[in-house]
Image (cartoon, rainbow over all chains, first blue to last red; front, side, top):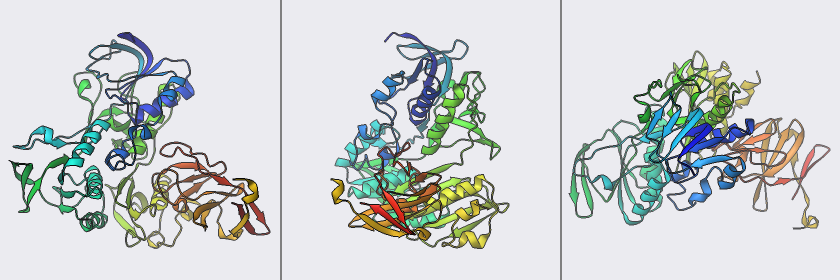
Length: 413
Length: 106
């Protein structure tokens, strides 16, 4: 391949959003030259297995690619792997990596997120593991083979999914979390407590309201002094404390950024012919009438599909109701809509066996919901809650709180 | 397996499945899903091909079934996996309705 290349459409980033955007572009436009530029050595792949089935050795890398090599060849989509774009000139419509100069007519930025990192005193940064991509998952997998005592910093979804996997591999696991509840403020305390109890029943030590006081290097690892007066000896440290949008190369450019790349409901950024989608986009949501940024599997997929249409000139408004899931042990937790702005909540079901759901209510309508169940227990009702919130259906507390009532009846009103 | 080994097995009556709904039917160690949609009654395997989840807890919309765990969608009539996270199709089975009784050929 040459080092100076031009494409009609370039997608910067090679994750889920890129894979679906590229495929969608080709459904509408068979002639424009199209490329995905990724700094990874892999075709776009699914991330959910990285904290679960891949860590548990149940699947291999080729099992969780979105599409194989043939798919992109057949659709004439070039994939430029191992290309770290270090400079962008929006006026020249030019992207520069170490060895290549790539010019474009239209650009989709789908650079996703990067992990928040932690500096730990007396701890060699090589001994601290993070999780976002396949390489990091492989490193964690390899170290997990040797380690016995795992310290996980961060009681969010990633930390807890890794804790669940490490526990299932027979490791001693300690999870520390600064807040008084796992999984942030949007998961209701009652549900977070059921999850905490599940971890503890399986032997994971969960330390809430806890921070690290000091760390000391010892023979096989580290001794960590915690603020809850416990001393944890560990030979592996994994950090899951959230992520930030990948926007460093745009910092000195005219592209409008604020907690990600600002876009409208049609993936358009502040620069003409430049679009953004997925984790990196702080997009205007027409239902909530404000900008939000979402880091979830479904959003990465659907925002990518919408961007694919928008970039080919098919005006598509993205107004999906947010939805995400987390699997820990046999528990499936799901969130939909907005769970951060409500007047009151209505509870349905009493525990994870039956399925327990919190509906968040504002102006007598569902704005969001959070549910927990064994297997697929709560999926249908969470889905219906999302649809009811989109249609702004007025609800009755008694009906919602009765586990035997059928929520789809409310849609037919 | 040749069709001589297949039989018509009764799974229930038409009033047992609401429109745009489904029921679970277990037979000889296997689980099936029987659907009632605008076009009639259909049957597929009852477990999602992505992960071991019962489709009975999923949601039927038009002629598609959505798995409750990760929202993977299958076409009810053809069993086709409509996109990620599901990529392996569901097996489908012939259905017949006699009087108000539903039979599937397995």
